[in-house]
Image (cartoon, rainbow over all chains, first blue to last red; front, side, top):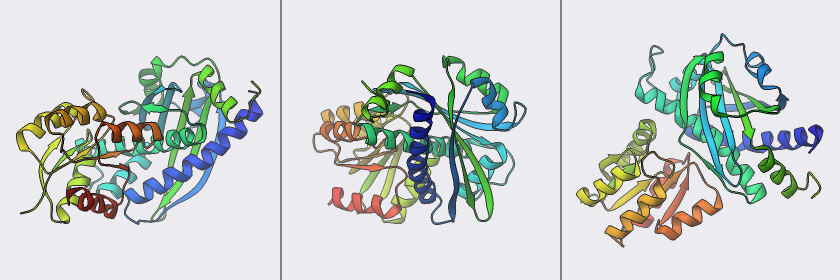
Length: 199
Length: 120
């Protein structure tokens, strides 16, 4: 698949997946306003990714999932730490803004899980292929360290898909980034099924 | 007497959310399991009227746990609560014996509706 067709498809996926994920988050927040501002898809070399989403030094919360089934790969949901804290506060209703305890960490894990799985569910519906998410892993650290440690297992040979979304809740902006690293051959299969590439 | 429910989810946050919804509507949460293996053990011990079951969990996944529980009690009433709502997975869970499949996040009403329907 050429890059332009791939990007078009990813933008479509970003739209649909983000739509699902936004509905999901709104439900979790019990009617607190949670409006989607922009979904945007890009493809970037792996080395530029951390830089693009706020720099290697920035503290981020990352939730990572390994995908198995018909389409294999990795997916991650990354948020600046401030966005993560705000979400935790909105979700648990009683977080004091200090240290993240077990409950707060598990809330973040669940947000990441639901965000990522919403995309997978959307893609599964479009293709009929099964994409099984692993148990999500949560890491809170400098972006550089998070990349090093958690994504070390992913063999990245090509550009990485980045879907950037922005939400706002009660007047505050929340930034989230979905990173998709599908296995190349499996992704080509997805493209064929969706008619984006000739057999 | 209130119907009893066993909650199964690997995240503490989700267990808390479910407990709040379930208890608010007059059911009694008799136990919380953090994975499938614990759910099977607690099922034997507590014999709850209903079970909520996550799919993706450490040690033992929800599908395996459904099968194990159905072996112990073919009349077990299990409601799946999972973010993974893909058709093949839903079919697998239902054919393993689950009575309903709720895709996370769910609204409280949908959970209560399912408990009422399954628990009747």
